[in-house]
Image (cartoon, rainbow, N blue to C red; front, side, top):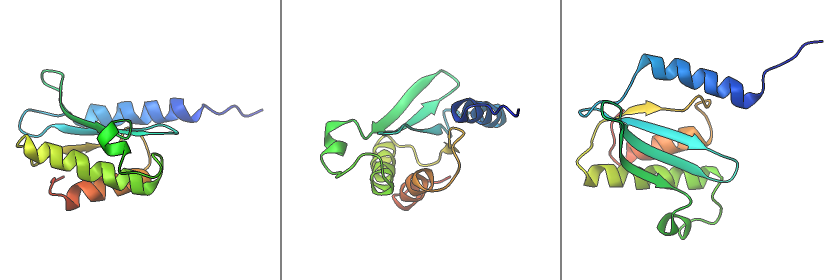
Length: 122
C-alpha cells in the first residue's frame, strides 16, 4: 500500500527548501505569505535581526471591514494592496517574495500581483 505524506508536511518541506535559497535583509526584506482555510496573513520580515517590519492579515478589523469573505481571491488581492501600502509608508520598496511552500496560483498569485500593482517590487 502506498502511503502519502500529508499536504501540510509536504508544504512545510517545500517552504524549508525555499527558505534555504533566500532570506530577507535590511535592504531587501522578505514578504512571507501564509494562508489558512479561513484567513490570509502577510508579513515583511528582516531575517538578519528577526524582526517583523510590517504585517497585515484578514483578521484585522480595518481589513475585515472591507471584505465580504476572508478566504477568497478578492480578499487576497485586497490584502496585497494593504501590505504594499503599509510597506511603502515605512519606506520599503523592494522585497523578496516567500510563497511559504504554497503553489503560486489562486490566492497567493492574487496577493503577489496586487502588491506589485500597488508599488512593491519583487
